[in-house]
Length: 456
Image (cartoon, rainbow, N blue to C red; front, side):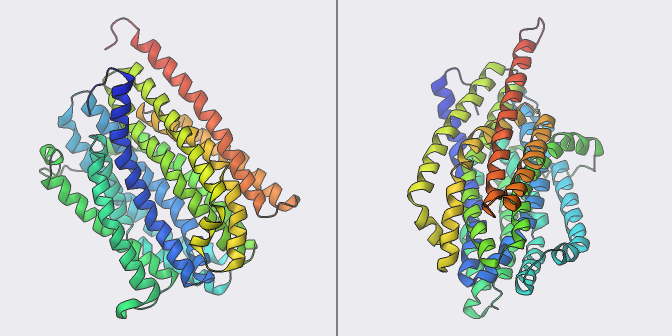
C-alpha cells in the first residue's frame, strides 16, 4: 500500500485492494453454496439437515473466527507507523490464540450438540443429518481459525491477491470432495448432507497448509520471517488482540446468529418451508459477500491511514467504500427482482420448495441497502480500532429489535414464516442507522485530535 493524494488515486488503490478480497469472499462462500446446492440435489432431508447444521455452525465459526480479524488492523497500523519489527510477534500470538479458541469450540460442541438438537422439533432424519454434518465439519476448526490469522496478516500488507489465489485453489478441492462424499461417487461412501461437512473440513486443512507455505516462501511475507522465532505465549498480546477481536467477533456473531436463530425457530414449520428459507437465505448471504468485502478492504485502508495519523484520508476512504457498496447493492436488488424464478431453481428440483423460495427471495431485496451501509461502516470503524459501540449496536438492532419483531409478526399476523424476514429487515435497517451515527462521531473526534498542537 502507498500514501495517496487524490480521490482518483484512492479509488484505484481501493479497487486494487477490494477486487481480490471480493473474489476471495465469494469463493469461500461458494463452498457453503455448493454444500447447500449439492445437498439439495441429494434430497429435501439433506438440504434441511445441512440448513440446521449450518445455522448452528456459521454463527460460531464466523463469530469466534472473527476474533482473528483483529490481526488486520493491528498489523496494518504497525506497518503504517513503520514498526514492522513488531509484526512477527503479533502474528505468532494470533496463531496461538486461534488454536486455543478452536479447541474451546470443539470442547463446547462435544457437550452441547446433542441437547441442542434434541430440543428442536425436527424430523429424525433431519436431526441425524445435522448432527453428522456438525461433527464432520468440526474437524476443520483448528486449521480454519489459523488460516484466518495468516490471511489477516497477508491482507494487512495490502497483498489481497495472494489470499485470493489461495482461496481459488481451495474451491475445486471442495467441489470434488462434495461430489465424492455427498453422492458416493468413485467408490466413496454416500454420506448425503454429512458428506458436505467432511468435504469442508478437509478443504480447511488444505488452505491452511497452502497459506503457511506462502507465508514462509513468498515475498513480501517471507521478509517478515514470521516462523524464524516461535515466541512464548504472551497473555498481554492475547489481551490486546482480544480487546479488539472480541467486539469484532461478537458483533459478527450477533449478526450471523440472528439469521441462524430464525432458521432454528423455523423448525416449527415443515421441511419444505425450512428448505425454501435456507435456499433463499443462502443466496442473500452470497450477495452479502459484496458489502462484506468492501468492509474488509476499508479495514485495511483506514487502518493504514489511521496508523500514520492521516485521518482526512481515512475519512475519504470510508465514504468511497459506502458509495461503492450502495451502487452495487442496487444492482443486486435488480438481479433478485428480475431473475427470481431462475435463482430459486438453482437450489432445488422440487416445485413446492422452489415456489416458496421465490417468495422469500423477494424479501431479500430489502436486505441489500441496509447491508450496503452497515457493513462498510463496520469495516471503517475497525480500521480506527473502534469496535465496542459496533458490538452494542449489533446486539440491540438484531436481538432487541429484529428478532422480537419477527417473532410477533410470524405468530400474531398472517405473515407466518415471512414475518421473521420482515424482522430481519427491521434489524438490519436500525443497525445501519446506529453505525452511521457512530462513524460520524469517530471521524469528528479524530479530526479534532489531529488539529491539536503537537499531535503527531
